Image 1 (cartoon, rainbow, N blue to C red):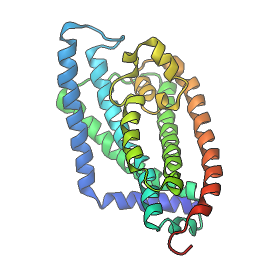
Image 2: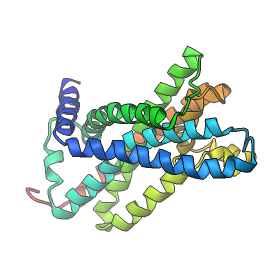
Image 3: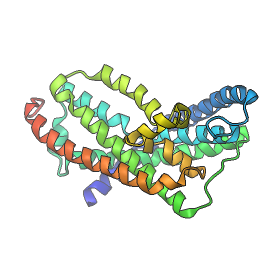
Length: 264
């Protein structure tokens, strides 16, 4: 456990040295909020509510979802594994005195904590700049459930991207697949638009998949909505996380024997 904690601390400190990345995250959050403000203000000019959401709700959701999507460090996991396998330097992870899955979880935890702070501050800046009143939930248990769901959702995404990175052991170049995956994830997690806009039938189907609980439902819980789904959501995302943890353990044991990189 101490080794994983040190890995997380090292990667947290590593992010501090890249101040330009932090500035880019703040700028991206501001730009996404500005774009959402322009688009949704035009749409709501002829509507009071859309899918039960007011303009204030929609703008609040835009700020929260932008912050959540940008603080998620999981994308780097699949890209790093894929790159290391292709250039033959994945060997460094195979000789570390720590499990490979645990290493990437700890690495992402350190990186994610840094970007959680940066994007939290960026969200506050956006609220102030655009005069958005964020309707945070007043119920402490719901707020706590949203925070736990955010952590579990990001842990699941790390495990999902770990699995996708392992595909490189068999298919060598999965870059195009990873790029397409990012676009799908932005839609499925509700980072682009609230999933409520898809209609009740589609939203009901999405509840069975983990992506619903990565960004969309935590954002709604923070806004004081759909509180009745909190416990069910925590259970579902936990099951998906456990499933991918077991799947990754089994998959890594099978594919690592195919690796012939440096030092192997």
